[in-house]
Length: 263
Image 1 (cartoon, helix red, strand yellow):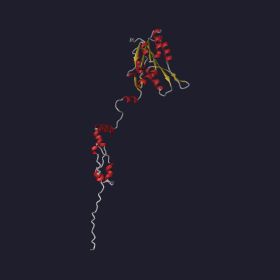
Image 2: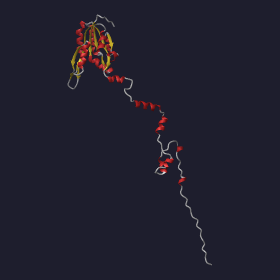
Image 3: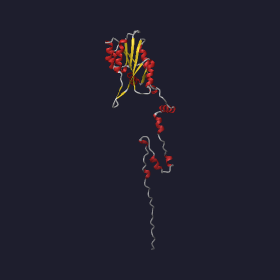
Image 4: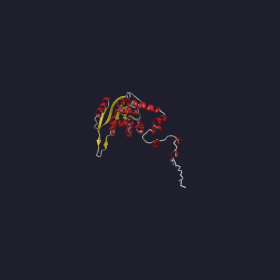
């Protein structure tokens, strides 16, 4: 890229294009100050114009004033709302007209936008007006044909051209957890050290043995039947049928006494 400090340069910024690209790609705001310094690169800056939309937000006046302090001439266009809720606000024609009018007084025209609709404007500035045309935008959202059409391209996919728009965005990208209670941490470490066998021994309920079962108010047989049995089939208590045998009936031996008959 040929750089001459005597080149007269004009910078035309499509604010809406950069704003939505930075928001979609990085959830961040654009650092217009760093962009202006890097596209100029020590050359003679003749005009720097920022094309923005006036939508009636509370913070937009502060934003426009910040652009003016950086060195931009801010041009505003009101947001048009049509019947049915459709909205329109673009500066494509306005940027093209200003670039053509300023071209005779400039050596280099810088379009800060990644919109492919500017390709006819680029061709006209180069061939008909003899200007060098450069572009600057986020490479991931820039038209590939626009990059091929311009004489030089500055890729804004760099941390110095954006900065986080909220504290929540920094917290989402942080690898460390936001908060962890000390008790939860100690319980998780304790559970990870315990083996599955210890869990089984801890969770297994304790049942009374036969001696304790007989001491209950219920009968010993009812309590034993209510206790679940663990282990293999060999541990199951066998049923003793012989213990519930019918009682033997004892018959008394009767002796018949012979009656003595009188002879």
